[in-house]
Image (tube, rainbow, N blue to C red; front, top):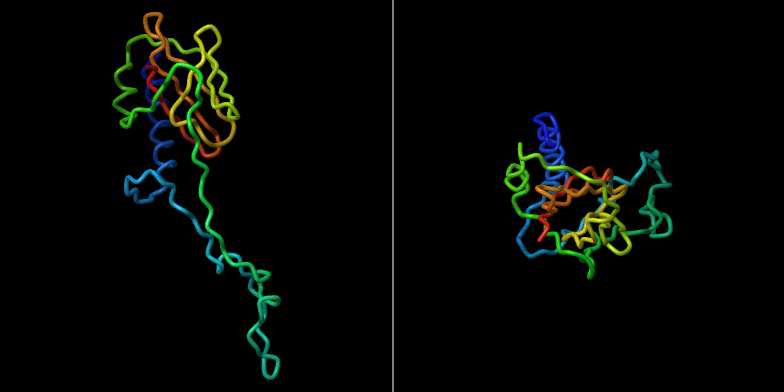
Length: 168
């Protein structure tokens, strides 16, 4: 049963996850991951500068960062599993969670397989959460109301985030 402290904790985790997931990037709605780049200056060490006749511009083989140039990296786009009952993350997570406050939702543990992207909730069945949770150390639970599955909640530790999925 969701008590007031538990609802508060879930809401805090949800908001922390949303803030961590957003990262302050502007989303153009295109659905593509924003490439990230590590500035070369952040990888440089503070080395003494040559003086007098020894001053020269280092060639690529002599550059402080080994001649490597920064490269853009993109986060992998995870597709939902092809098997299992669909469970989709609502766009308004807070509103979705609030509808269950005080209704006596029971939760049961599930196992999420990052390789197959299937969430196995034992006798409750297999679920294809969309989008699949990313990150490390993902744990999931299923919310049961009046004997029926109503949501899947997955929490990852790195990055810390919680995502609710509506069971369809």
